[in-house]
Image 1 (spheres, rainbow, N blue to C red):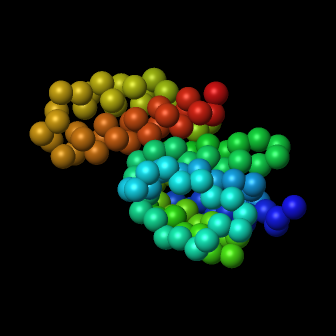
Image 2: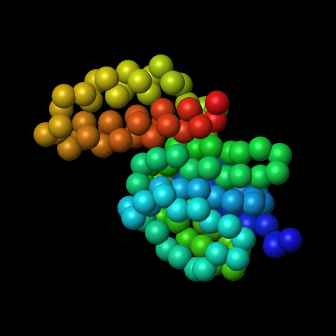
Length: 128
Protein backbone atom coordinates (compact mmCIF):
# COMPACT_ATOMS: atom_id res chain seq x y z
CA UNK A 1 0.00 0.00 0.00
CA UNK A 2 1.22 3.51 -0.84
CA UNK A 3 2.18 5.95 1.85
CA UNK A 4 -0.69 8.24 2.85
CA UNK A 5 -0.94 11.87 1.81
CA UNK A 6 0.20 14.49 4.30
CA UNK A 7 -2.41 17.23 4.07
CA UNK A 8 -2.48 20.77 5.43
CA UNK A 9 -5.61 22.87 5.07
CA UNK A 10 -4.67 26.44 5.92
CA UNK A 11 -6.65 29.68 6.07
CA UNK A 12 -4.98 33.07 6.12
CA UNK A 13 -5.28 33.23 9.91
CA UNK A 14 -4.95 29.60 11.07
CA UNK A 15 -4.22 25.98 10.26
CA UNK A 16 -7.71 24.52 9.92
CA UNK A 17 -6.76 20.85 9.59
CA UNK A 18 -3.57 18.84 9.30
CA UNK A 19 -3.06 15.09 9.07
CA UNK A 20 -2.86 12.02 6.88
CA UNK A 21 -5.39 11.11 4.21
CA UNK A 22 -6.02 8.56 1.49
CA UNK A 23 -7.50 11.05 -0.98
CA UNK A 24 -8.21 14.77 -1.43
CA UNK A 25 -10.87 16.18 -3.75
CA UNK A 26 -10.97 19.90 -4.53
CA UNK A 27 -12.45 22.24 -7.12
CA UNK A 28 -9.95 24.15 -9.25
CA UNK A 29 -10.39 26.69 -12.02
CA UNK A 30 -9.93 23.76 -14.44
CA UNK A 31 -12.50 21.52 -12.71
CA UNK A 32 -12.57 19.03 -9.85
CA UNK A 33 -9.31 17.26 -9.07
CA UNK A 34 -8.75 14.10 -7.06
CA UNK A 35 -5.38 13.55 -5.42
CA UNK A 36 -4.20 10.06 -4.44
CA UNK A 37 -0.83 8.98 -3.02
CA UNK A 38 1.83 9.11 -5.72
CA UNK A 39 0.10 11.92 -7.63
CA UNK A 40 2.28 13.95 -9.98
CA UNK A 41 3.26 17.42 -8.76
CA UNK A 42 0.61 20.03 -9.48
CA UNK A 43 -0.24 23.61 -8.60
CA UNK A 44 -3.86 24.66 -9.00
CA UNK A 45 -5.98 27.73 -8.42
CA UNK A 46 -8.98 26.93 -6.22
CA UNK A 47 -12.44 28.34 -6.82
CA UNK A 48 -15.13 28.55 -4.13
CA UNK A 49 -16.28 25.03 -3.42
CA UNK A 50 -16.01 22.06 -1.12
CA UNK A 51 -12.78 20.24 -0.31
CA UNK A 52 -13.00 16.63 0.83
CA UNK A 53 -10.17 15.00 2.76
CA UNK A 54 -10.84 11.27 2.91
CA UNK A 55 -9.39 9.13 5.68
CA UNK A 56 -10.13 5.55 6.73
CA UNK A 57 -12.03 6.82 9.78
CA UNK A 58 -14.13 9.37 7.86
CA UNK A 59 -14.11 12.41 5.62
CA UNK A 60 -13.27 15.98 6.58
CA UNK A 61 -15.27 18.43 4.46
CA UNK A 62 -14.63 22.17 4.26
CA UNK A 63 -15.84 25.11 2.20
CA UNK A 64 -12.85 26.85 0.63
CA UNK A 65 -13.20 30.32 -0.82
CA UNK A 66 -10.48 30.60 -3.44
CA UNK A 67 -6.80 29.96 -2.90
CA UNK A 68 -4.23 27.47 -4.09
CA UNK A 69 -3.62 23.73 -4.03
CA UNK A 70 -0.12 22.30 -4.30
CA UNK A 71 0.88 18.67 -4.54
CA UNK A 72 4.39 17.22 -4.40
CA UNK A 73 5.92 14.12 -2.82
CA UNK A 74 2.65 12.97 -1.19
CA UNK A 75 2.22 16.38 0.44
CA UNK A 76 -0.93 18.36 -0.27
CA UNK A 77 -1.11 21.99 0.73
CA UNK A 78 -4.39 23.87 0.50
CA UNK A 79 -4.07 27.59 1.21
CA UNK A 80 -7.10 29.86 1.12
CA UNK A 81 -8.07 33.22 2.48
CA UNK A 82 -11.15 31.70 4.10
CA UNK A 83 -11.83 28.06 5.06
CA UNK A 84 -14.87 26.79 6.96
CA UNK A 85 -15.22 23.22 8.19
CA UNK A 86 -18.61 21.85 7.18
CA UNK A 87 -19.69 21.19 10.76
CA UNK A 88 -19.09 24.90 11.55
CA UNK A 89 -21.38 26.12 8.75
CA UNK A 90 -24.82 27.46 9.62
CA UNK A 91 -26.91 26.18 6.72
CA UNK A 92 -29.72 28.69 7.37
CA UNK A 93 -27.35 31.65 7.24
CA UNK A 94 -25.74 30.31 4.06
CA UNK A 95 -29.15 30.00 2.41
CA UNK A 96 -30.10 33.53 3.50
CA UNK A 97 -26.86 34.87 2.00
CA UNK A 98 -27.62 33.07 -1.26
CA UNK A 99 -31.18 34.42 -1.29
CA UNK A 100 -29.93 38.00 -0.69
CA UNK A 101 -27.57 37.78 -3.66
CA UNK A 102 -30.23 36.40 -6.05
CA UNK A 103 -31.09 38.68 -8.94
CA UNK A 104 -28.00 40.85 -8.55
CA UNK A 105 -26.02 39.31 -11.41
CA UNK A 106 -24.49 42.63 -12.45
CA UNK A 107 -23.07 43.26 -8.96
CA UNK A 108 -19.59 41.74 -8.58
CA UNK A 109 -19.81 41.66 -4.77
CA UNK A 110 -23.19 39.89 -4.89
CA UNK A 111 -21.83 37.35 -7.38
CA UNK A 112 -18.88 36.60 -5.07
CA UNK A 113 -21.22 36.36 -2.07
CA UNK A 114 -23.41 33.91 -3.98
CA UNK A 115 -20.38 31.75 -4.84
CA UNK A 116 -19.32 31.67 -1.18
CA UNK A 117 -22.85 30.78 -0.05
CA UNK A 118 -23.12 28.00 -2.63
CA UNK A 119 -19.74 26.61 -1.51
CA UNK A 120 -20.96 26.54 2.09
CA UNK A 121 -24.20 24.82 1.15
CA UNK A 122 -22.42 22.18 -0.97
CA UNK A 123 -19.84 21.50 1.76
CA UNK A 124 -22.53 21.15 4.41
CA UNK A 125 -24.47 18.79 2.13
CA UNK A 126 -21.41 16.59 1.55
CA UNK A 127 -20.79 16.35 5.29
CA UNK A 128 -24.29 14.99 5.86
